[in-house]
Image (cartoon, rainbow, N blue to C red; front, side, top):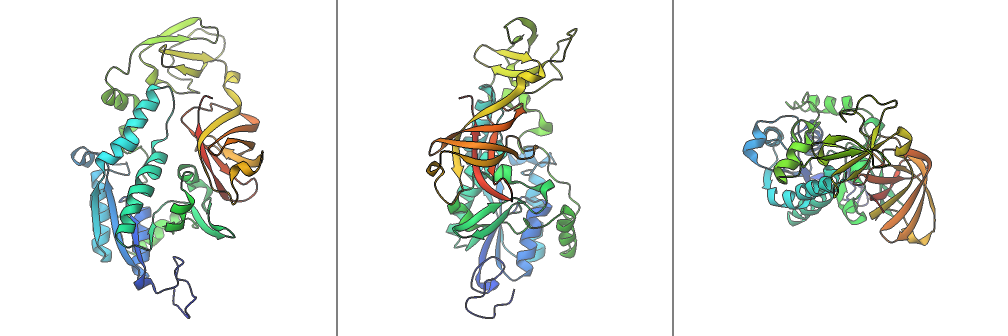
Length: 380
């Protein structure tokens, strides 16, 4: 964007020429972050690409379909070479293991259903990588996430993506106001993935047709249990499957093989109604099952809240909001009742099924796109 005067802002929101604006782009090797880097480079920005090596590089090379695989590092480097900007690979294996993988394993062992991608954004990408960007004297850091950053009356705000099907706000609720001030999300306004791929074609990027990543990067083929057993030997200890009255219905091979709301694979036959996992008791090595109605939840305790409102959350006793209790579900109307600066009780106006400790509860304005933060669901 040309600058016509001292107060004219460039496309990243700075009152200076793109060539004088340094931006670190977090490059996963996928089409989204590659397009961000290519677009900014073509606009004349001083782009530096950074890719994180988050786990064993040798093992990564053999596995496609995950955001951190070794082949993706090569793809990111190739984009940088094609577009003519520097690219660095940073070894964050120890940080990633301590901040993400260990908690993932421990949460599963405690009967929760963790979301490691949120912790990775919170504790690695938007913490250590963001500090690295500052150390490189960058004006901002850009990512390929589908979420929007808008300037409001009290500063930058977080908003859902222009394409609801690709919105990643659930995974970015813990982004703080300070981080948001430094971050940019150039793809957030796009209304379809086809637009992103068209931009990749425009820049001649070889990743234009690359499939989207599906798995959690350190969980091959979605097999959580096998990863937990490797990280925590002995975690798959057998136990009992019981009904809500404690009656033993069957045996299981480890609580880590089950999640709240699960129906298939319970190994219970000959019953008059289908049963679902309604609770996990890892201390007693018990999986508790019951009818579908037993999954209904109206009151959800939430902690470690990151609040993105214009005034402190505790200034009101109640906040009418919409919330998501799982990434795949639409926002539902609710009432948020703060109990402390970082804890609250969320009352769902219509009950939800399969609300699970370890998942996030993300807050949205009832009519509109703004994200007011969120927190982690726990047992209370």
